Length: 290
Length: 71
Image 1 (cartoon, each protein chain N blue to C red):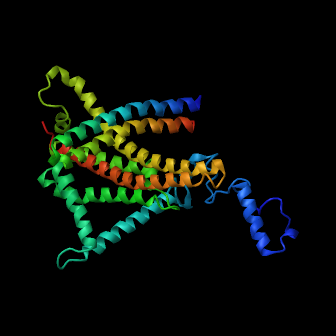
Image 2 (image 1 turned 135 degrees about the horizontal axis):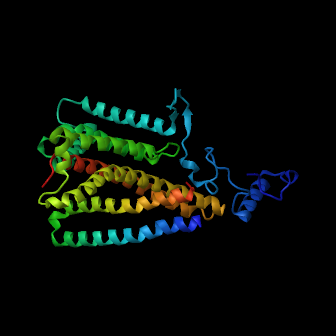
Image 3 (image 1 turned 180 degrees about the horizontal axis):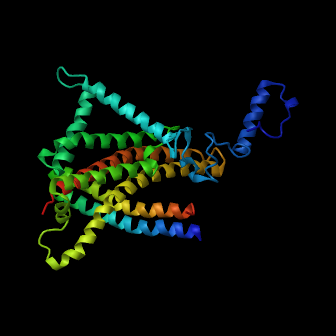
């Protein structure tokens, strides 16, 4: 980003002349000479659009064959854990009197999670599932929201983290069904009532595939929604680089602003959908409603 | 060829998703107008159903990204 082209240093004797010369050169070019250097070391979004989403290693740690490095996603998850635990511990300390302030806000969320999500789908004795559902909800919510801060990384935009959550949910609802009904009873509960006996060998593989498809759809839904939002943001910023002029800049910036607000909404919606589907699957495994 | 297939994958999926969400939202709005006091439950179910339909479009988005990065 040099100065205005076509002006020698010897001509700029007067500061006023210098300012006018810079202004005239700026308006004449209506842009920055040359390509802009993209800070952050990711590479130009025009040439390498997905380079922004590559895994960035902060602290390489190798334990034998396992690669346990601290990457940006791991650091983001640490921040989420610290933030969530601080919020809830601070709210839990307020034990005397009516709830006010932070505790009031978090109690609204906990009541909503307990009544509208857990008790609706798992039934009255589902109270022991509320801590898990609340942890899942707040973890995904804070992971999605913290990714919108400019220099931080979205943990859920990497396929591994939603996949881990989905595998955990799969083991939980299959385990809950097996513990309650026994292994054969769980498979029997998959088959709807009133199905003629000769149809069962056809229904069973379909139902089993359906059960295995549930964690896949959970993981891909969360991952793709968050990743798509961030890709749109990077593409909007790439429009500015493509035109390389400052006159075009306000339109993509408006788009980025609107997409950020939409991402806040979508982060909440995706956390809510993941949580409510988890509660539905656990409820369906515990009380097959036939 | 790569660009054509990636574009077609997402574009064709978007047709079905747009139709699906439109039908869903139309039915939900109609039922909310018929019985305004059930609005909250209908709105919640509509948002859950929209997430299901949108997930199918996003499966093909993931395929388009895989095609584009030539895996």
